Image (cartoon, rainbow, N blue to C red; front, side, top):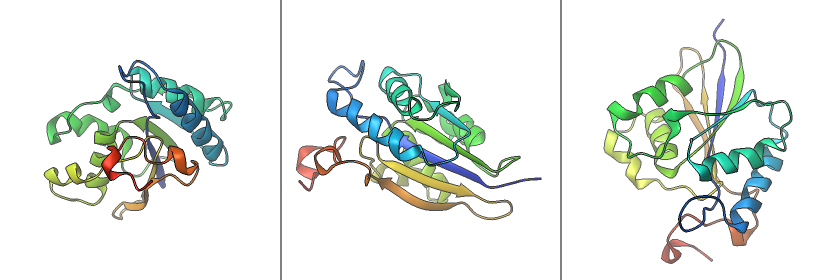
Amino acid sequence: MIEIRHLWIARHAFANEDESGLTGDGEQQATLLGERMAGVPLTAIFHSPLARAAQTAGLVAAHLPGVPCEAADELDDQFPTPANSAAMIKRFTGPAPAETHQLLITHAFQVAWFVRDALEAPDDRWRGLNSCNAGLTLIRYFPAQKPRVIMFNDVSHLPAALQWTGFPPELRPL
């Protein structure tokens, strides 16, 4: 039987300048994201192999005992195109064999590409979307129906001072 896939997607938390890990603010963002996701019946966490996403996933997973957490090369930080994003879309989208809730921790480009794909928007339309660090997106995939973007870039789990990292200062509302 084919069931609903609830695909939760988060941009990694705020990284330090050389992107080798998270800042103190980023660690706090990841911890708060983990606390928020603790009430979701997650079946797996997948993350980009890059350090900033792996560290975010580790801090989130600390709040989700028993939920497997693994790196997925398909979620790496690369400029999305139909060709290089096909494996990511194939692996993580569409209905699932059983109802599932998966969390992906990846990068802004990949979050935007998932949303573009779900909305069936032209390939170049993802560039207009940006996500805050630790911003949460939810897409639901139903059998024999079009996907539904339930929320995009939700940061309600973060205090105001941590909500707009990942955007240039001139675009932050604070």
